[in-house]
Length: 374
Image (spheres, rainbow, N blue to C red):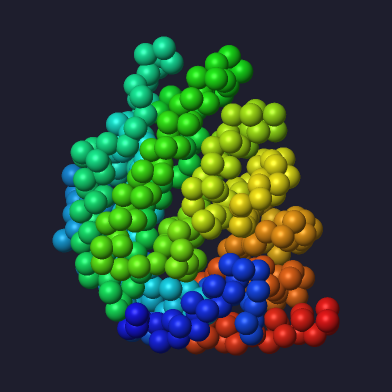
C-alpha cells in the first residue's frame, strides 16, 4: 500500500519489522515528526481544543462528530512531516478520550470543557451488588467510537493508518469504575473480588480491541495504537499506572496475571512503565516471557530520558525492546549509550528541515556506536 504522506514507507516498515525482532538494518529506529512548511497557524489546535471550547455540547461534537473529526485529523496529517519510522496515523477516537473502555462498560463518561479530556465517574459502590463487567456492542459510547473508526478507516487507504482507541488498562478501568481511593483500601480487604473484576474487565478489553480492529480492517490493515509503532501482526500497549500506589506483592498477586494474559492474547506487546513509582515492579514485568518491550516514561518533573541510562540498560540486558520519547538534543546520547538494535526513539522537531537532519544524524550515531562497540 502506497502512502501519499510518506514516500519512504516501505523502508520504514522494514526497519520496524527488524526492530520487533531485536535486529537492525542500517540504523536505529527513530520516529520524528514536524510541521510541514505549508502548515497553517491552526496546526497546533488540530489535535486538541486546548481549553478553547467552553460549551459542553460543542466540545462533545468536536470529539465525536465524524463530519468534524475526520476532516480535521486529515488536515493535521496533511500538514505533518513523518520522518524516519514515523507513520501518518489517524486516531478517530481522540487520544484525550483516555480509558474509554470504562464508558463501554457503562460508567458515566463526559468531556469536560476547559480540560481537553474525558472523565469517568464510578459505576458501583458495593462489591456485593456490582454489575458484571462485559463489553456491550450496543453501548452508546462504543457506537460513537465505531462510527468514528469506520469513517476514518474508509478514507485511509493510500493516505494513512488508523489507530484503535486508547482502551487503557483493565486495572485502571476497574479503579475508575469503583473509585481509586476506595479500591486501594479494598485491595487489602477484598483482593479476590477485585481480581475477579479485573478478569472481567480484561476480557472486555480484548473484546473492545477486537471490535475496534475489526472495524478498521474492513478498510485498511496494520496494527496501530497510541504508541504508533508499525506492525503487520497484532500489537498493543499494556498498562497498570495504579501500580505506583501498591506493593510488589499486591501487584504480582492481583494485577500481573491480567497483564500476562494480555501478552498471550496479543502477539506483540509494549508495556507503558510510567514514573519512578512503577520501577519497583520492573523485574516482575521483565520476567514475562511474551512481553516484547518497555516504554519508559519518567513522568512530569523527573530527569530527562538521557539521564536514565542505567535503567534503560537494565531493560535491554533482559532482552526487551525500548520505546523512548525524548528531546531531539538527547538522541545522540541515547544512540551512543544504548544498544541500537533494541531502541525506538520518538521525538519532534520545530521544522521539517531539522527533522530530516536528525534522521541523517541518527544513522551516523548508530554507525559510530556499532564501530566503537564492535
